[in-house]
Length: 408
Ligand code: SF4
Image 1: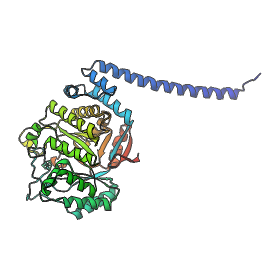
Image 2: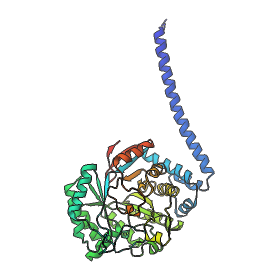
Image 3: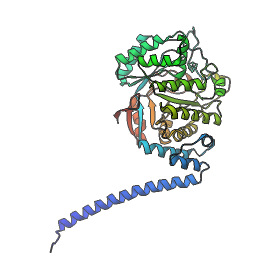
Image 4: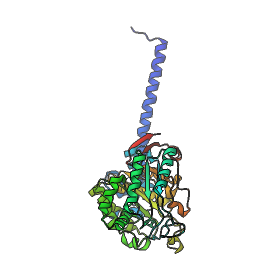
């Protein structure tokens, strides 16, 4: 007969206790997940938009009428639960960011958007255009000090700048700093260059791609409804032109971001139409890498002076827009950005839990939004990492194409 020694009995006891703790922890996790899901299910049943949210959970994106109901609803918390769930399913508890700078190469502009505090008309004493030497020294400084992997090139519609200025700038950046990607120019800047050069936008895109332009930011979309554009930016390209140029870029293999500027004169119908127009283009081209909803900052703008808009849309609206963006583009546009630039770091932390997966960029040197005087418009990578870690998420530094370059 085999007799167990006291030592063996204690060893078996310890192993059994460890296994029990392990099993208990496993059951506890399953129970917590189950409990979270049943809490979510119960909240969905009580929500006026429960049917749309349940569809989202089962992989069906909201249609135009659903989108309007979401925008009209105050059930932002439940939208966030669903959008956050969809996001974590794909990305886990993780956020990416890009170490980048914005190069606002000129503030000269002839388009006079009423929401813009940045531009100056040609000949104005505060107008400027950055030279190629200045471009090189600014990129060099940001690359050496912060290891940037992206330059976002953004400026006014300056009729004195021909395509060679941009070609030389992009070639210079790509040759001297090969690890730095060029994100720019926006569809409306492309349109301006085509007018200066008396050529078409496809030709401009093709030449700029050849010179090193790798991707296109979404600026100039604002709200893709011409009745809105007539009020806030009557001289800017139409909605169809923005969509056409984006389609041309995608066709040439240039990916892009899509944006929406909300919180001014637009209606719920207008926002839903904007979402749907981007959906339709993306279904055809699959060229958008990210969607960024950002709120209008009225400070120092003509729209504030004319009392069209007095104050920004605020935090609750941001969370609603982030959550709706995730649901509208789930499985269609991979990344949703947190919009920290106009809403601040604390709201960006919330946005990551309401459907965003990308914090955005460090935006060194940003000048456009800073002209509204609303808040500091640049961060360091260290501050973004800290902000993301504070909410218990992992951090991935990415490049221009959302490839991971480093994890924290
Ligand atoms: S938003 Fe752009 S296009 Fe409009 S006025 Fe400002 S710089 Fe010019």
